[in-house]
Length: 165
Image 1 (cartoon, rainbow, N blue to C red):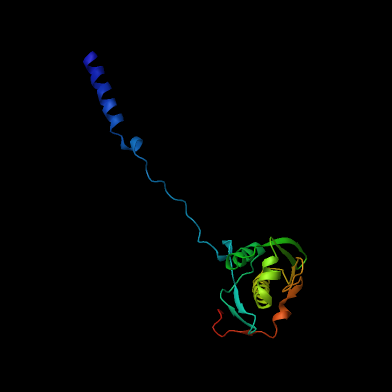
Image 2: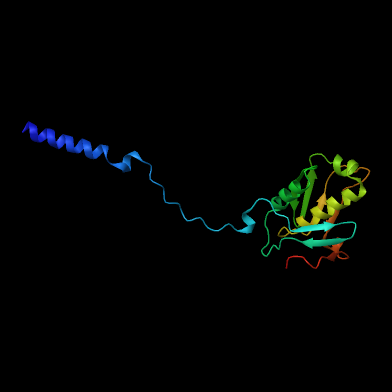
């Protein structure tokens, strides 16, 4: 009987040692990941522009409304690393934005640089769902002053023919 129990114990030991399922990590089945929607990204730029020529070019078509202004602000901040824009608040259809350090915009960018930046920022921020006005809140300087912009400010601008439709 001892021989019989010893044989069974050895068989169980061998089976336990040779079970690769307990020794090796099996690859996990990955959950189905839905395709990322364009609006799920945290950085968006829809327009590029040239304020001197009053010309704009749509580089990304927001076929659906983007509900969050922060995605556009992230894109603007990435494009213009010299200045960091941030949301102050939203009231109705108006987005109020401020800057961490507005001195680049007001004193160092020059009048053309400030106009370029504010035009670029406004064109993009107006793509936010429900936003019809963008108000810039900062202390005025030599090249820029606080103002409220809307789509009518761009009525006389030409849209580049190579714009995304």
